[in-house]
Image (cartoon, rainbow, N blue to C red):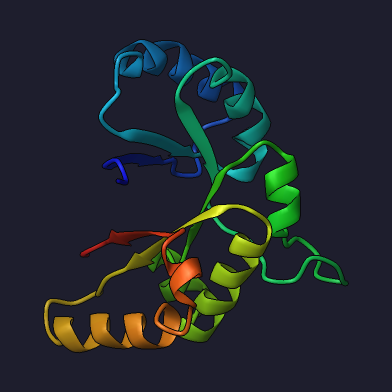
Length: 165
């Protein structure tokens, strides 16, 4: 049985010192959480600090994004293998901001899900709508095109986060 998940997603304003300070306060709040998983997804530059700060706790660290290729001339992109090697266990895929500002599609979400799973990461796939109209059709399309092509074994390894705007 999967435990409920509590997630925290940083905005781009925390630096490593602020990340360390956050964890000093946050760790004591979740020390006795046995009924859910706690996943923190800081920006890439704060991952190393977060991984160290979460040592000997039940807190999992994830990345906010990944690229679907492991090698190649993709300046600025970070692969699932790199994220896993940095100490992360999870990665956010398909966040509404990535879809809106960077033009991510259901096809790229699917590529990223597969890459995350192949790297041994647990993907946290975000689905949601930007407007209150057409909610059902947007969710259906995101699921049908971006998630449903996964095999049952792959599907069982992901976390779906509903993200209404």
